[in-house]
Amino acid sequence: MTKKIIAFLLIVIGFSVSYAQDDDRPQNTGDNFSLEGALSLFKKAASLKEFEKMLNKENNSVNNLDLNNDGDIDYIMVDDIQEGNNHVIVLSTYINDNEKQDIATIGIEKNGDESATLQIEGDQDLYAQNTFVEPSDNIDAYSGGKGGPNVPEIITTQLVVNVWFWPSVRFLYAPTYIAWHSPWHWGLYPRWWRPWRPYRFSVFYGNCTPFRAYYRRVPMRRIMVAHNIYAPRRHFSTFVVHNRRGGPMIRYEGRGRGHGHGRGRNRR
Picture 1 (cartoon, rainbow, N blue to C red):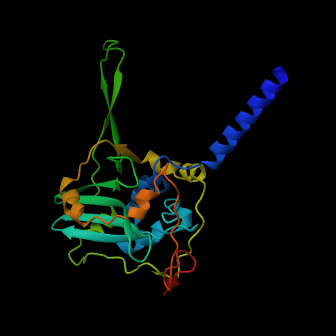
Picture 2 (picture 1 turned 90 degrees about the vertical axis):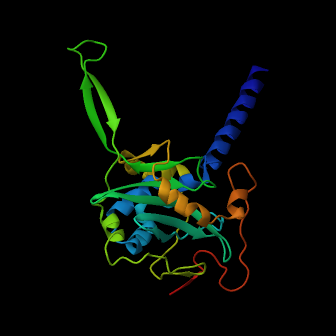
Picture 3 (picture 1 turned 90 degrees about the horizontal axis):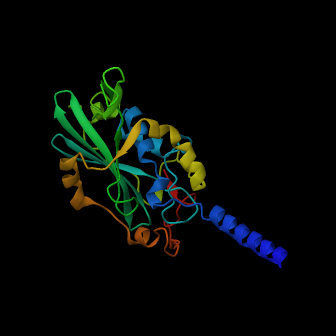
């Protein structure tokens, strides 16, 4: 009897381990796109065109999204909504030829002659509610603490980072700047783009580890004006909502010319 019980337990454990390995999915769909990594690339980019190209390079380990479940990574487009000294950089992808899904927005506000702040916010259909990421910069202060004046206590304060001197930000506020809009569309993508198969989430998450040292998640929206500008212009897809974790997985089936997603897409 004891041997039968042990054998039964081993079978149950085996099924559990196998299921855990097969269910290597993120808690939220958007976790397959690194907001921290996107800010890291944005900081380096000299223009929004360059930023878009960097987002769509496999070796940058930022994008692992396949929102329409066709087996290939989605192409991320970059568009700028500009009103006065405020910019909203919208990162999005086409699910098919009719539906577009926003992934995240980078809100930027100029608040001085040489001062600007930004946050990236994950879209509500892909990320947990109120998912905000911003550059991380800490300062340590010392106090007497509970142990008396001879036992100092270190208090770490997080600072709001001035991003004015980032090349990408200077590009946006140049006198000759014209708001950038990605020229690409469903079925029409640049020749240099080579979509790849999505990585297992555990592998992708590990590849994003270096980004999290320099960009932190915060609990509140800091860039209010940019959010108000963007809200009425948001793109979302019902297809993406249906494919949230816990629901039945749906695969988009393209029909007709130009509907093929991934390697079958047309390119200039």
